[in-house]
Length: 341
Image (cartoon, rainbow, N blue to C red):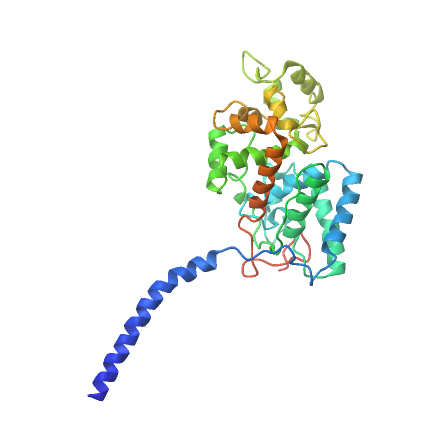
């Protein structure tokens, strides 16, 4: 009888265990998929001079090359929108890992000043606190600081990101908007990543300090259609100026124009005002001023810079924590252009 009772009790325990595991397992799976915790004071003890060292390098680089701000923001965005913020766009191609993200067609025009700034910062921080500060944190913080330095909003950047272990050019296509994409395509691309139409319009406002190569908008000024060589949506005088600037773009692919022709070095809401006047450089940008899904937000930001700054800051913070890596699926690189192993 005692053996029978013991057997029955064991069966009860086993059934209870099965039920318990059935209940808890999904919770554990969800828990494991949560992003790693990031904190504002992540380097307070491990690298207390992180902010001072980074700010010094950023200030010097921006003074040397005023287009650095736009360059860094662009690289930051191209990094985060492809598999999350993991510094994968900083990695260089080599014979071991193949063609990296940096060498994807859309990334070939990424400005060298951004990579130079990250390299300078990483070198200085490795000397100060080796193996502590990730390249991804350097890139995210540099983008924020440069936005603020050029007149834009300040927003808190939580730290503790790890650098990713994968960088493949083949993963880039389909994750970044192209100038000739329809507004529906671009909206859907952002929606898949969890961003609303309003957040997308706010983020594109970073073009207020950006620039684009002539090849990205040449079709609008040279061969728009068989009957109209110039896009009629472009301001005529603006179009003429662009044609002169880009006359030899096929021979010199580095030729570029500022996205904001009025205040190219200042982070402000002039970009949206330009769209209302037919001064949008890229076709996809100009389309935002006309599409009924985006036009109300463009008009709001053109009239209210504070609203733009507030929404932009929130959206950039959201981008900066998109699919960040932890110790389990990342590392702190010794060099930002190569994996540790």
